[in-house]
Image (cartoon, rainbow, N blue to C red):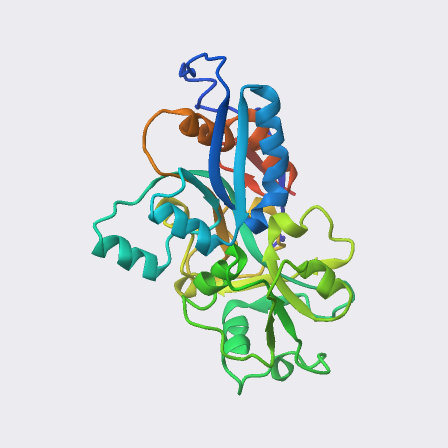
Length: 319
């Protein structure tokens, strides 16, 4: 059967949001300062959008604190920040605390759909892995990749970001189902803001885990590992039930790591970028959230970064 690869075409962006459904902000000349938290690892992706928003509305200043994802949720859950931009949902512990203290889930708006990806050195002979192989290799000391991939001279060393990052939270959710990584001699966890791509490209590690948005625009030094999986083994996207039904049934063959397969839900580790709001009211924070999640500029920008904007219309053509 002819292998089918899908080319992503950005069609006219039809947004049913703030600027196309008749809702308008109240006009005011008073200075507006919007405070909030953003997960540190998301700042490089989002900074262009923040500057664009301030430029288009000269009355608005964004005062965002970049910190780790756990501090951001701590501030949100305690009521000390009006908004949080993060790439994860509540952890099981946070869920339990919310139930115990009768805290309702916060209003949130999806911004874009990214992916947790495995990267390798450009000249690595390894180009494909299976989900269960990755799980076993990172958790079972008796399992060796060299036994399944004879061309590997030794088991690869893997580097992952800081435990408080959204990337690590995605690893915990999608690969380990919130169980801890146990094979420290195989997996090195960074303690700061080190660039995972640099560490892999420079040969310090053979494999690394990152978000697609962090590497999609420059794959000149690393390559993306294709991941095969069985849909029964996948936890699915962050509470997006409709999307999870499209993950496929049974064994899914490895596909090129590309936004088109994120759109079709033919990739196992899909991650959603969210903005959480302390209050579910139509105030300045709400309109800022709608801008990030629905504006033509932001949605086109996400597409240009190699990921799927939440409200972009796509046409996928087989090649």
